[in-house]
Length: 108
Image (cartoon, rainbow, N blue to C red; front, side, top):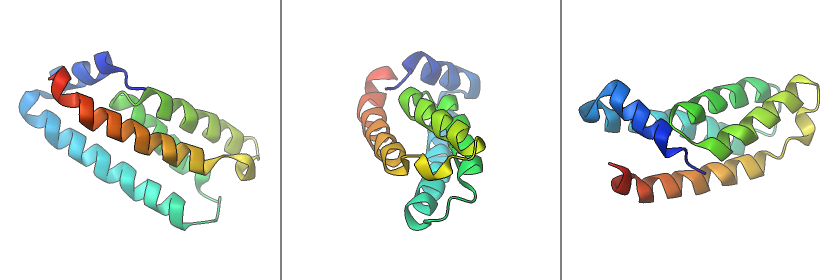
């Protein structure tokens, strides 16, 4: 679910002191998009939202979440936005976030 070597790589790139700020910013930005997906039944911006989420997820090692976003992005790009299981993507994010926050101290 979490690609911990990517997390450690990011920590090394930004430095230990700034790492927690980067994590907080990531979670804040992703939560904004997740909240929009929850509230908005429109799929007009789904491809762009999933593209953003995919990139964010990759940067912080949320591997399975990134894969779901990529799959949904491709479906949306091919005109099948209505078939994307947004709830599964949101649920996976919530699970990934829980695992990440719980296991992060063990990987510091």
